[in-house]
Image 1: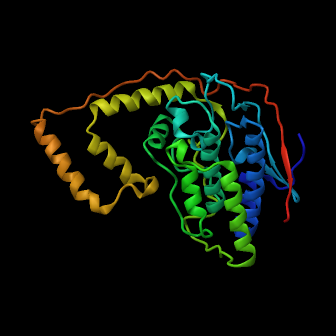
Image 2: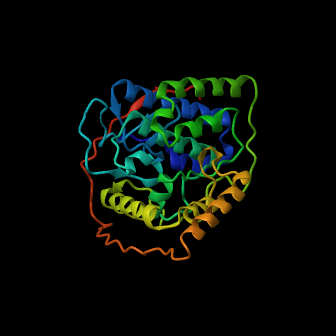
Length: 306
């Protein structure tokens, strides 16, 4: 494998975060998206895009590890799901096939990583509960220290509806406009805060290595479906909404009273006989199972103006 002096995106940001200007970040993002655009123009879906397989040297940007990529024209939907939970689109967890929009969702998480210097959901346990939360709308927290239009584009990329996500070409031109604005008109100052910058303590339950996930996903969807039938929907919604802000600002203070009234009426109609049934799931997984598929590495290389 070739040597990339700046390493992968994760290490590049960890080692240099506060010294990397937004102008440089946007250049790196632009050339990364250039690579993804070329992949999509070739009718290929990457299917495992994350910060660990985006590489930089002083002059080039690379997208690697296309070992599980597939043609976008294939009708076959593999039963095996493989990847890193925070970068996987919710529709994949729910049994839909991989599309270019699935890669765009992953790119939205990469945009968040550029913005914060942290990997998404680093404070969560990467298990069936996180899969359920993502399907229910959970996204990483938004920080405001970003160029104009950046956050809006990022949220479009991770929209829960794949049809509402922008295409690679749309993103390419929007980022190009942002970097021109950053270079010549309005530079964004990086303000140090507790919300950004590399974390000093790693969460051992946050797994950022691609792995087989089909059994875990199946268990997560079974549990999610069971909860939708047996658990008070108002309680479950409020519990998850309190943990983190959901996409599109869907939880607003003005709706709190209305939700409480609806919940009280719901419980009254059940005459206090309402109860929930705890469900046990036998998850027979082997986390040590080797799943190296004989990775074949391809790279897309672009000149950088940095």
